[in-house]
Length: 154
Image 1 (cartoon, rainbow, N blue to C red):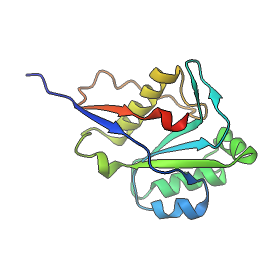
Image 2 (cartoon, helix red, strand yellow; image 1 turned 135 degrees about the horizontal axis):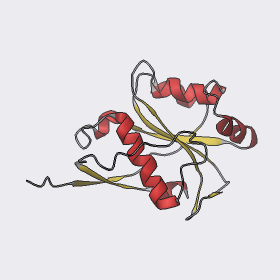
Image 3 (cartoon, helix red, strand yellow; image 1 turned 90 degrees about the vertical axis):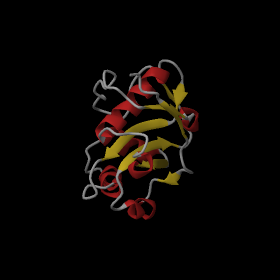
């Protein structure tokens, strides 16, 4: 029996400035977050994008607020994000994992990899500040086909 895939378009919310007042309300939320800059477009192999980093929070105790705070304060040791923040205003947007539960029955780590690998397919390489690569999830039977609005970051 072939399972029908569901096509779901992913649009990103209005950008928030990468500041503590915008990060704190995400306490307790799990999901994916996307950090990008305002003006500088990174020349990736296939096309340009302002996206710098795709990250995730898998537990409420290590929520998106906690992870973004780590990046904001430099505790995550992501020198790329720290240095981009020194030179220009950064922004972020996020996807609450609960909103995708009925379309995604895998772990959030797999969702992050799905997004990273989709970015690689469209842009030719991982986002510039992602130090780790997404592991290959393409052999899993996915019951979702996300159409991701990467133009949001262009």
